[in-house]
Amino acid sequence: MLMMAAVAAMAVVAAVAHVAVMNCRAATAADLAALSAADAARGLTTGDPCDIATRVARGNGAQLVSCTEVPGLAGAIDVDVEVDLNHWVTVLGPARGMARAGPPAEEVSDPP
Image 1 (cartoon, rainbow, N blue to C red):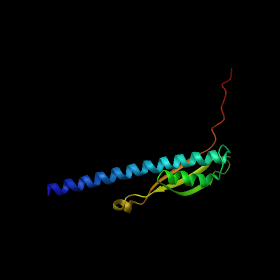
Image 2: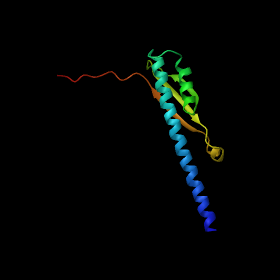
Image 3: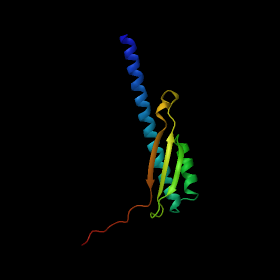
Image 4: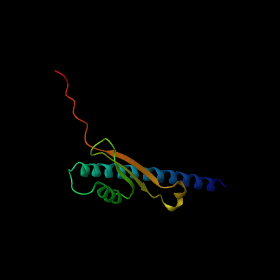
């Protein structure tokens, strides 16, 4: 009985660790996809921003769910990505990552 409880506890710990790793992967993929898309939106690289975000997300093990330009913020892009969890924790749904990237804030000079 004690052995079964230990095995069950280890399975729970492994599942929690897996979910944490997949959440980190989703966040990283979202950050990189948003940064790449924002560079394209600003003309720093060539290509459609959302096509680039799709490729970058896929290259980081994620699937792009949405990619939108931020109204009122020229060159800013919002992205949402998902990373599928292993079959034994799919009941929790996919790990999601969201990010926004755009041009750097204008530099403010200090008064003399």
